[in-house]
Image 1 (cartoon, helix red, strand yellow):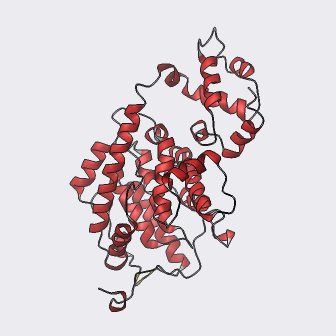
Image 2: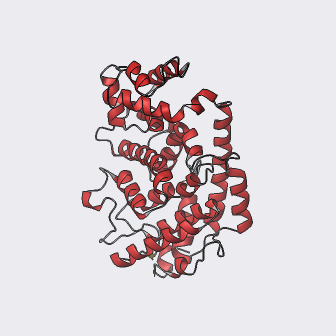
Image 3: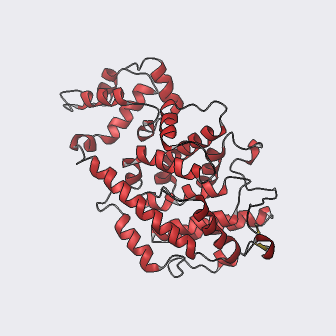
Length: 350
């Protein structure tokens, strides 16, 4: 039906309020359980382990796929090159991609510590939209301005108190959902439907969908190969009719593609190095001391009690990791881009 023939509709609270976690299902329950069963890590690991393991590939996949759905003109290859350089200049498309990268790194670091919180979602929006909003006070802030969505008769709520209340309701219900795939889908459609921020709501919803998946160590969702028209039609069903059928089909299709991709990425890594596993936290701490505090590797291993006679092979492993450290892989050691770049510019003192 053409746009001019459809009656305008606004936000309907019942879409969230009528939903009871673990009793209601937006996705068919069997489908959500199948995707969870097939997408999770088999072994017991700390929250966020899966995402950390595939982080380098995820940064490229999700940043590029999500930005492409926003009309970004960069190719996948150009995105990889941009991430190696780490600088955007005045190119808005480059800023969008680098913001996605920074936002994913933020989630991988923050989600295991904070869980799904309002502050997390608002900070996620702020990182995603940095330098892309004219009003910098709108970063992470519940909007007070009118929002119009192109090619739909849906008019989101314009009442800030309603937006704030419904955002809290969405997040509180999502936290109670035991199936992380259902929780991911619930967040994805509801954040996009609510439109709580001035701009960047759909990209925020795509990254937010990964939060429950990170918490439960499931394969990330990177929206691989989703076409903009298919995505728009899936959202249209939710906006105008509260019909999630197309969104379910799209989500299941792209999540299966993501699962296959990241299983292969994990397999390509081979068996984990037992020494790396044993000293994982020590390695992160040691690299932080070298890069941020500019201590020598020799001083660091002595300080941490990891000298050659105490931890054979640790210093050699530390030196090898420092050699490979770049701005595009620094997040796994909880380093910021700026700190890493400053250390590299200083000729990698160690």
